[in-house]
Length: 88
Image 1 (cartoon, one colour):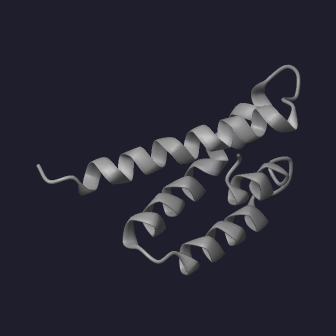
Image 2: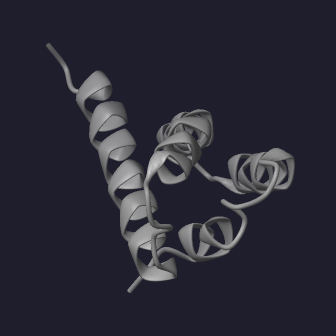
Image 3: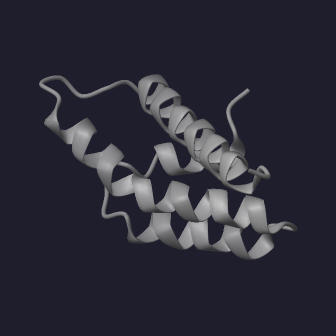
């Protein structure tokens, strides 16, 4: 099942990302933990890169492909945040 934020953001990837960043900011503010807030901040910071990759394709991706890409980004930022919080 796709993360609810990913589902909403995927529909915004063709537009100016201002609304998408505002939506991510709302999620950041509602997160109960520092690690979740950090993950969503990283996720929001990566949206521009994802959008550039989408726009550079010869054929536009399907909605499902966009959701898959955003899900992968969210998973990667969660992994990054979790790795940073592990004791060394």
